[in-house]
Image (cartoon, rainbow, N blue to C red; front, side, top):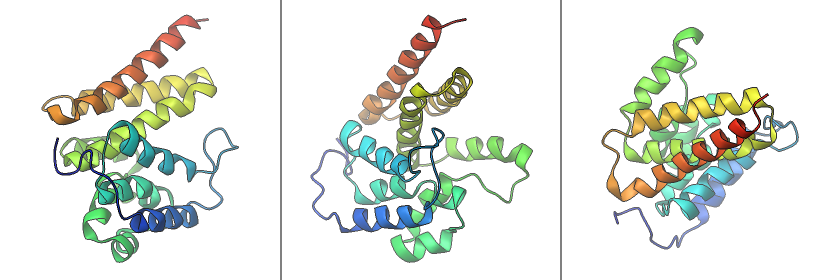
Length: 189
């Protein structure tokens, strides 16, 4: 066990502040099902980190709650840093595709940078990936296959040198990939 795993979270104030911030920033946005408010996704990601991955560091959980604010809203690094500090803002920025990069290069640059990121960022991305795999089960086959491809890419990128103390998090994502893959295999047309 390491310094941000398995401890009781005693101060919920930063997390409640992050939920409120994310809800305000994602207001009016919906998930791919067109029914679920977008803010449900970052809330589930933070919950996955806390409950399934046993992350107890409030800064990591805060970054998970805010992980799409820079990429998907008008929020920038300064906004996040002002409210939550530069460490959290840096992690959120690392979890965001850079809008300044040409669109055709954006995904490649993002994953290249993500592969070099710290374990805190990678844990948030694994939580994001897991939630996306779970969330697409009710969507059409192309959406499921796209999520599966992205998830496989994340696992391939993170697996070399993945810390043993977080093996359970990686294993959980691999199980979700296998489950969705099996489900798609059973429904081949």
